[in-house]
Image (cartoon, rainbow, N blue to C red; front, side, top):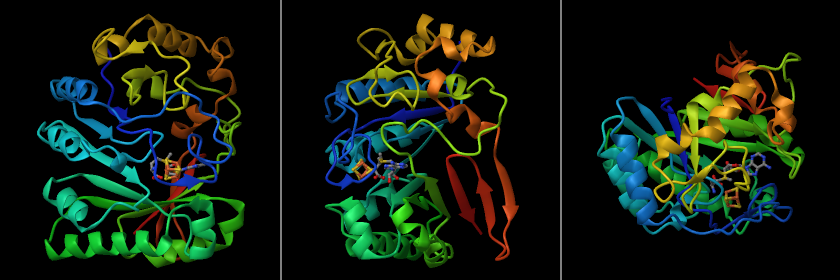
Length: 308
Ligand SMILES: C[S@@+](CC[C@H](N)C(=O)[O-])C[C@H]1O[C@@H](n2cnc3c(N)ncnc32)[C@H](O)[C@@H]1O
Ligand code: SF4
């Protein structure tokens, strides 16, 4: 049996913000499945199953929505952190990351947290991230960084993610400069234009198998296993975790095993999702260089990551 090294656990598909490019909550959102919060009957057995594996696993407790919308999030993170083989973190829009949350993520030993912030200017940020407020998000971020320093805590590692919308590309350098000395990493992600968002720039000419099929499992808020992280609408689910089978059993079931065989045989065109997807290239087109300022810059088709 294959055991994944990474799990996307969509604890919530709900959101308090509406971002321009968001596949679920943006004005051009194309995801039509219902949205809700993951229930205890789904997240508890899934986390316990992952915790029983004899392998280190990274659980990303986000998906298509905002994790802090789930009132169980503290319990979810605490349970995950009770297993020594689980590393856990999540992406957040930062609007609800108040002082009590900052206290919690530090004391719970959350491994990482990434704030999504699009640029440095409130006028453009609050238009792109509609219903968000850059001043408030930055205040929440600074508060977490201050508290972490005060408690001399190494975790959570704090990262930032800016989406490279054309309208704010002129803010990219200012964004990196503003935060690089304060956080553990700054990412600038390629803008994915919904709904043709599975195509990436700078993809190698020769196609290779997608390593995600062997490394990552995606569990939607309603317990359905997704085909992979590109199955935004969960159109290709092999079944519901817990109801139909355990996570590992489903992930090693016939649907995903057949797809792995197609990839090994180079028959990518035989699956309707893989035929039009470039995400496989992430693993094969990645390089890290030092830039003029001495920052480590890692370029891949999906993003540029900066660290010091
Ligand atoms: C779907 S959100 C879920 C987590 C959380 N709600 C947040 O905003 O961080 C995950 C990430 O995708 C980014 N994102 C949204 N629309 C995008 C697009 N069209 N292209 C690339 N990234 C996008 C968001 O800014 C965020 O960093
Ligand atoms: S905050 Fe995240 S989930 Fe919400 S609309 Fe923006 S990108 Fe989508």
